[in-house]
Image (cartoon, rainbow, N blue to C red; front, side, top):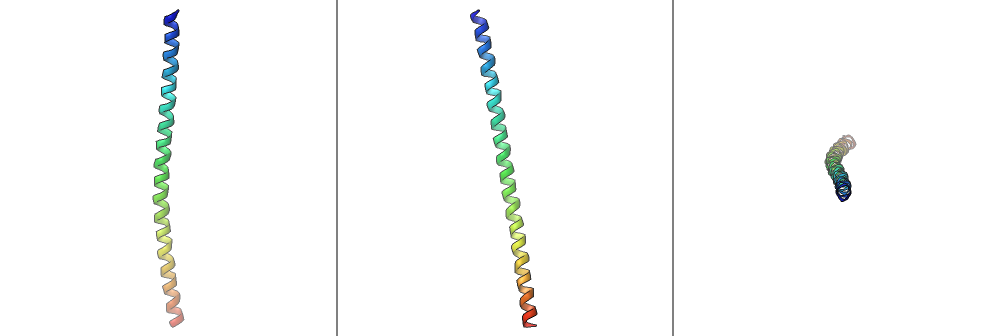
Length: 65
């Protein structure tokens, strides 16, 4: 009987470890996606800033015509 109890406890521990490992993997994936999103956002903002600067220069040329 004691052996069966130990086996049940082992299975519970194993399930808990698998669950924790899955949560860690999910958290790592989320962190990687967040990092990628941050880099992509920074690149997009840089492009927009360059476009605004270009537009500003073009408007300045029109005014000074």
